[in-house]
Length: 71
View 1 (cartoon, helix red, strand yellow):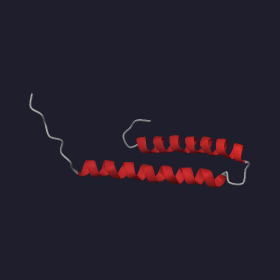
View 2 (cartoon, helix red, strand yellow):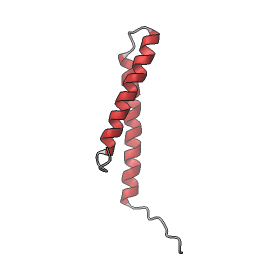
View 3 (cartoon, helix red, strand yellow):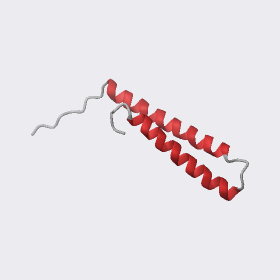
View 4 (cartoon, one colour):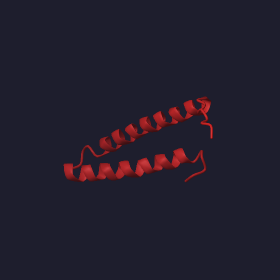
């Protein structure tokens, strides 16, 4: 069976752009979560920041998966 070459076309660049955009959005989510919990006591702030980051990251995954029809 012959081995087929993988063609790098516009879809490859679009996928790379989506991955980089998701990464940038994730960094923004983490910075936003840390900024919101700045005035709270350290122990509660850490847990709240982690919980908020997790929820917002799941929301990002949902939004980014809408285009492909997979929730």
